[in-house]
Length: 338
Length: 54
Image (cartoon, rainbow over all chains, first blue to last red):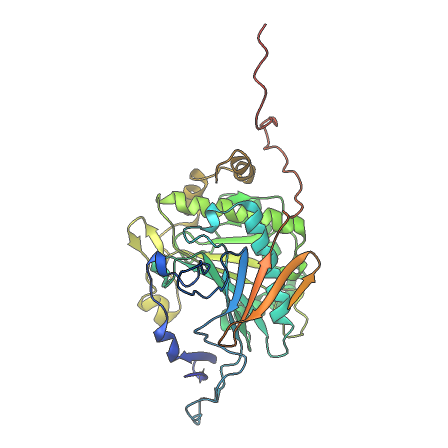
């Protein structure tokens, strides 16, 4: 059962997807449904003995291209619509124990090429208005399968967080004649205290306004509205900055660091979104090695985040651990490290 | 179905339940510019020859 129910107070859609209760939950590694299907083994989602990178439609989708009619009638204040869209799973590697932080740079660059291809492919569908690329990592953020993978939701609407950010970016552009993210990044680079890692083309930093304890924004220096504008050189630099950042995260508490990685970029609704600026955002629930931040009453009920960490201190902590520079990430890999 | 977009090699199949699955293959490493040396650190070969003994 799946449908879109309108929340009239927040003016946004809620997806009901009751079939997702049946999802495979933290299976043992021998029965991972995202590993290749080995000869004589049980059949996984991927009917091949190996693969480079695989994308497939989610077995338990929140949105589907041919959705059922809603099982409930609309109310006088809340419309109901079929949950139309596409939910894809992206398998980063055939190796069950792999992670983005440990993968060769070439593989991460391949992944960036796949992301770009999915953005273009899904975004070309007439019912897709927003392509949302993301990864949940770690049980602390609700992961049900540990195999390295991300997801893509092709939404039939612009999701509310993106919509709000786009509206702010549009207003800023109209008032100041320049891009909000470009201006924000220029401020961060000029200040310097919150910079975590700088590549030639991408920069990772804890934003001045961070809501999560070790939140990081990773954005291109040049104005790019979406992945569609990435060159090979962009994706190479992105792979090194991304890998370096994730190695820093894992080094912070000397264990795999849970995060939500989301990509905000231009919608695919056919409108002019030149004011939009692509960026990755990392939301990180750990505020200390053994302490988690929860989205409790104030965050969930008032919509106001309370951050227990100063962004300047979080950035300093991240700079001190892991690879000291993007050049060090490349050098370590060439020398045979990870 | 197999197709190439630029130098992106992908092959699409249908799973038994009708879902779409795409294999992306990358037989050759993508072209990558040589990274510049880290500021302040002279570029050194990865496997430098041992110093000559005199």
